[in-house]
Length: 110
Length: 118
Image 1 (tube, one colour):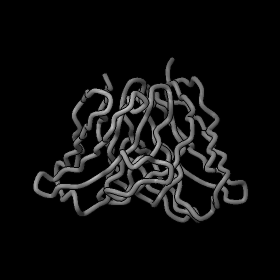
Image 2: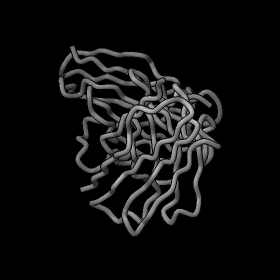
Image 3: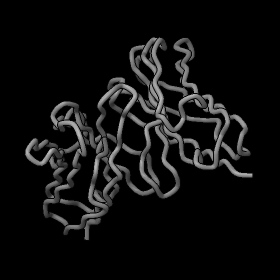
Protein backbone atom coordinates (compact mmCIF):
# COMPACT_ATOMS: atom_id res chain seq x y z
CA UNK A 1 0.00 0.00 0.00
CA UNK A 2 1.01 3.66 -0.22
CA UNK A 3 0.47 6.68 1.97
CA UNK A 4 -0.29 9.85 0.00
CA UNK A 5 0.29 13.32 1.44
CA UNK A 6 -0.10 16.74 -0.15
CA UNK A 7 3.23 18.02 -1.41
CA UNK A 8 2.92 21.31 0.44
CA UNK A 9 0.63 23.40 2.61
CA UNK A 10 0.93 26.94 3.88
CA UNK A 11 -0.79 29.00 6.52
CA UNK A 12 -0.27 32.12 8.57
CA UNK A 13 1.08 32.30 12.12
CA UNK A 14 -1.58 31.73 14.75
CA UNK A 15 -3.85 29.83 12.37
CA UNK A 16 -4.64 26.09 12.21
CA UNK A 17 -3.46 23.72 9.49
CA UNK A 18 -4.33 20.10 8.79
CA UNK A 19 -2.10 17.70 6.86
CA UNK A 20 -3.72 14.56 5.48
CA UNK A 21 -2.30 11.10 4.83
CA UNK A 22 -4.44 8.79 2.69
CA UNK A 23 -3.92 5.03 2.68
CA UNK A 24 -4.27 3.47 -0.77
CA UNK A 25 -5.40 -0.01 0.29
CA UNK A 26 -6.31 -1.67 3.54
CA UNK A 27 -8.07 0.17 6.33
CA UNK A 28 -6.39 3.15 7.98
CA UNK A 29 -7.84 1.87 11.26
CA UNK A 30 -6.10 -1.51 11.06
CA UNK A 31 -2.57 -0.24 11.79
CA UNK A 32 -1.34 2.69 13.84
CA UNK A 33 -0.21 5.90 12.15
CA UNK A 34 2.76 7.93 13.32
CA UNK A 35 3.80 11.47 12.34
CA UNK A 36 7.32 12.90 12.23
CA UNK A 37 8.55 16.46 11.93
CA UNK A 38 11.78 17.20 10.09
CA UNK A 39 13.07 20.74 10.30
CA UNK A 40 15.56 21.87 7.62
CA UNK A 41 18.97 20.33 8.18
CA UNK A 42 17.80 18.18 11.09
CA UNK A 43 16.79 14.58 11.63
CA UNK A 44 13.11 13.68 12.11
CA UNK A 45 11.42 13.76 15.50
CA UNK A 46 8.19 12.11 16.53
CA UNK A 47 5.18 14.38 17.06
CA UNK A 48 2.32 11.81 17.08
CA UNK A 49 2.33 8.05 17.63
CA UNK A 50 -0.46 5.47 17.59
CA UNK A 51 -2.82 7.73 15.63
CA UNK A 52 -3.31 10.42 18.25
CA UNK A 53 -0.82 10.10 21.11
CA UNK A 54 1.74 12.84 21.75
CA UNK A 55 5.27 12.02 22.92
CA UNK A 56 6.32 13.84 26.06
CA UNK A 57 7.52 17.34 25.27
CA UNK A 58 5.35 17.77 22.17
CA UNK A 59 2.94 20.68 22.73
CA UNK A 60 -0.80 20.04 22.67
CA UNK A 61 -1.02 22.29 19.61
CA UNK A 62 -0.23 19.06 17.73
CA UNK A 63 -3.03 16.51 17.40
CA UNK A 64 -3.64 13.42 15.32
CA UNK A 65 -6.75 11.58 14.17
CA UNK A 66 -7.97 9.03 11.67
CA UNK A 67 -11.06 9.07 9.44
CA UNK A 68 -12.26 5.72 8.16
CA UNK A 69 -14.67 7.31 5.68
CA UNK A 70 -11.78 8.84 3.73
CA UNK A 71 -9.31 6.13 4.82
CA UNK A 72 -6.94 8.81 5.95
CA UNK A 73 -5.05 10.12 8.94
CA UNK A 74 -4.64 13.78 9.78
CA UNK A 75 -2.12 15.88 11.66
CA UNK A 76 -3.54 19.17 12.90
CA UNK A 77 -1.36 21.98 14.19
CA UNK A 78 -3.10 24.89 15.89
CA UNK A 79 -1.69 28.26 16.88
CA UNK A 80 0.93 27.99 14.16
CA UNK A 81 4.40 29.32 14.93
CA UNK A 82 7.27 29.98 12.55
CA UNK A 83 9.19 27.17 14.29
CA UNK A 84 6.57 24.70 13.01
CA UNK A 85 7.84 25.25 9.47
CA UNK A 86 9.16 21.82 8.49
CA UNK A 87 8.53 18.68 6.48
CA UNK A 88 5.98 16.31 8.03
CA UNK A 89 5.85 12.58 7.31
CA UNK A 90 3.18 10.05 8.17
CA UNK A 91 4.12 6.38 8.69
CA UNK A 92 2.21 3.14 9.00
CA UNK A 93 2.61 -0.55 8.13
CA UNK A 94 0.73 -3.68 7.18
CA UNK A 95 3.23 -6.41 8.01
CA UNK A 96 6.44 -6.38 10.01
CA UNK A 97 8.49 -6.15 6.82
CA UNK A 98 6.35 -3.52 5.15
CA UNK A 99 6.78 -0.26 6.99
CA UNK A 100 5.69 2.66 4.82
CA UNK A 101 6.28 6.40 4.98
CA UNK A 102 4.23 8.99 3.19
CA UNK A 103 6.01 11.21 0.69
CA UNK A 104 6.13 14.14 3.08
CA UNK A 105 4.41 17.52 3.25
CA UNK A 106 6.30 20.80 3.35
CA UNK A 107 4.61 23.18 5.77
CA UNK A 108 5.28 26.85 5.19
CA UNK A 109 4.28 29.30 7.89
CA UNK A 110 3.91 32.59 6.05
CA UNK B 1 17.60 11.09 27.14
CA UNK B 2 17.93 8.88 24.07
CA UNK B 3 21.20 9.41 22.19
CA UNK B 4 22.01 7.64 18.94
CA UNK B 5 25.28 8.24 17.12
CA UNK B 6 25.78 6.77 13.66
CA UNK B 7 29.17 6.27 12.04
CA UNK B 8 30.73 4.48 9.09
CA UNK B 9 29.33 6.47 6.20
CA UNK B 10 31.45 7.69 3.32
CA UNK B 11 32.04 7.48 -0.41
CA UNK B 12 32.15 3.98 -1.87
CA UNK B 13 32.24 2.58 -5.39
CA UNK B 14 29.30 0.63 -6.82
CA UNK B 15 29.48 -3.06 -5.96
CA UNK B 16 31.54 -2.49 -2.81
CA UNK B 17 30.55 -2.91 0.83
CA UNK B 18 30.21 -0.62 3.84
CA UNK B 19 29.26 -1.22 7.47
CA UNK B 20 27.38 1.39 9.46
CA UNK B 21 27.37 1.46 13.25
CA UNK B 22 25.05 3.14 15.71
CA UNK B 23 26.03 3.61 19.35
CA UNK B 24 23.05 4.00 21.67
CA UNK B 25 22.76 5.47 25.14
CA UNK B 26 20.17 6.93 27.47
CA UNK B 27 17.79 3.95 27.42
CA UNK B 28 17.79 0.20 28.00
CA UNK B 29 19.07 -0.74 24.56
CA UNK B 30 18.45 -4.48 24.93
CA UNK B 31 14.72 -3.89 25.45
CA UNK B 32 13.95 -2.16 22.16
CA UNK B 33 13.78 -2.98 18.47
CA UNK B 34 16.08 -0.88 16.31
CA UNK B 35 15.52 0.37 12.77
CA UNK B 36 17.53 1.86 9.94
CA UNK B 37 15.74 4.45 7.79
CA UNK B 38 17.31 6.27 4.86
CA UNK B 39 16.69 9.52 3.01
CA UNK B 40 18.07 10.20 -0.45
CA UNK B 41 19.20 13.78 -1.05
CA UNK B 42 16.17 16.03 -1.29
CA UNK B 43 13.79 13.10 -1.04
CA UNK B 44 11.52 11.46 1.52
CA UNK B 45 12.06 8.80 4.14
CA UNK B 46 12.44 5.10 3.27
CA UNK B 47 12.39 2.34 5.87
CA UNK B 48 15.34 -0.05 5.39
CA UNK B 49 15.43 -2.69 8.11
CA UNK B 50 14.49 -3.61 11.67
CA UNK B 51 15.91 -5.99 14.26
CA UNK B 52 14.13 -7.28 17.35
CA UNK B 53 15.28 -6.38 20.85
CA UNK B 54 17.16 -9.65 21.37
CA UNK B 55 18.43 -9.83 17.79
CA UNK B 56 16.50 -12.96 16.92
CA UNK B 57 14.32 -11.47 14.17
CA UNK B 58 15.20 -9.10 11.35
CA UNK B 59 13.23 -7.78 8.40
CA UNK B 60 14.13 -5.77 5.31
CA UNK B 61 12.66 -3.55 2.63
CA UNK B 62 12.46 -5.28 -0.74
CA UNK B 63 14.92 -2.74 -2.15
CA UNK B 64 17.75 -4.02 0.09
CA UNK B 65 16.77 -7.61 0.83
CA UNK B 66 19.63 -9.99 0.10
CA UNK B 67 22.19 -7.17 0.09
CA UNK B 68 21.93 -5.55 3.54
CA UNK B 69 22.14 -7.23 6.95
CA UNK B 70 21.13 -5.65 10.25
CA UNK B 71 22.65 -6.93 13.47
CA UNK B 72 23.14 -5.81 17.05
CA UNK B 73 25.44 -6.33 20.01
CA UNK B 74 23.51 -5.70 23.20
CA UNK B 75 26.72 -5.90 25.26
CA UNK B 76 28.00 -2.86 23.36
CA UNK B 77 24.67 -1.05 22.94
CA UNK B 78 25.34 -0.95 19.22
CA UNK B 79 23.36 -1.78 16.09
CA UNK B 80 24.97 -2.33 12.71
CA UNK B 81 24.00 -2.26 9.06
CA UNK B 82 26.21 -4.27 6.72
CA UNK B 83 25.63 -3.02 3.20
CA UNK B 84 26.89 -5.19 0.33
CA UNK B 85 26.69 -4.87 -3.46
CA UNK B 86 26.04 -1.16 -3.11
CA UNK B 87 24.28 0.69 -5.92
CA UNK B 88 24.13 4.40 -6.79
CA UNK B 89 20.48 4.40 -5.68
CA UNK B 90 21.63 3.47 -2.17
CA UNK B 91 23.09 6.97 -1.86
CA UNK B 92 21.35 8.51 1.15
CA UNK B 93 21.55 9.73 4.71
CA UNK B 94 21.13 6.65 6.90
CA UNK B 95 19.37 7.15 10.22
CA UNK B 96 19.50 4.80 13.19
CA UNK B 97 16.12 4.81 14.93
CA UNK B 98 15.00 3.45 18.27
CA UNK B 99 11.82 1.50 17.74
CA UNK B 100 8.59 2.11 19.53
CA UNK B 101 7.88 -1.38 18.19
CA UNK B 102 8.99 -3.56 15.28
CA UNK B 103 6.83 -1.40 13.01
CA UNK B 104 6.99 2.05 14.59
CA UNK B 105 9.87 4.48 14.85
CA UNK B 106 10.56 6.57 17.95
CA UNK B 107 13.82 8.48 18.43
CA UNK B 108 16.21 9.23 15.58
CA UNK B 109 19.97 9.72 15.37
CA UNK B 110 21.62 12.48 13.38
CA UNK B 111 22.43 10.20 10.47
CA UNK B 112 25.49 9.19 8.48
CA UNK B 113 25.82 9.94 4.78
CA UNK B 114 26.55 7.17 2.30
CA UNK B 115 27.48 8.09 -1.25
CA UNK B 116 27.80 5.35 -3.86
CA UNK B 117 29.68 6.66 -6.86
CA UNK B 118 32.49 5.69 -9.16
